[in-house]
Image (spheres, rainbow, N blue to C red):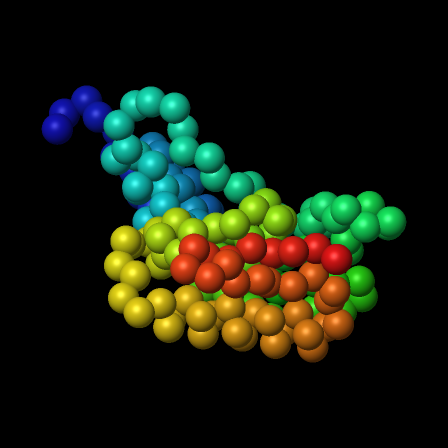
Length: 168
């Protein structure tokens, strides 16, 4: 089509690679750099959606702590999306892309139940649920990493519905 600007989508997992890619694409009319294929799919899904009220979407946790209802009022739990690590107080543990994306969903809205279908759409980028063993496997790995860091927050399964991150 003539007259329409083209869009280049670049995928780079580290911040150094994203900076290098931005320099390479600097002369391009429009470009988007994301850290994973899943993020690119989410962007493309947003572009394809018909106009209307936006679907509720939790904001990535980034460096900010996750709210808590406990006496300290704030957890020191954070997900560093640039480095793809889970941070608790002074300690960190690496996350796989799936662990990161799933934890960002749950931690962005602590206490809210995420359905299996919604999580699968956000993390895997499709509506296929299958038997759900893929999702349970990722949740199991995140739980182990939370335990390794002695994080008091837990991921609860809501039988037949989905998962939620429950702060202490």
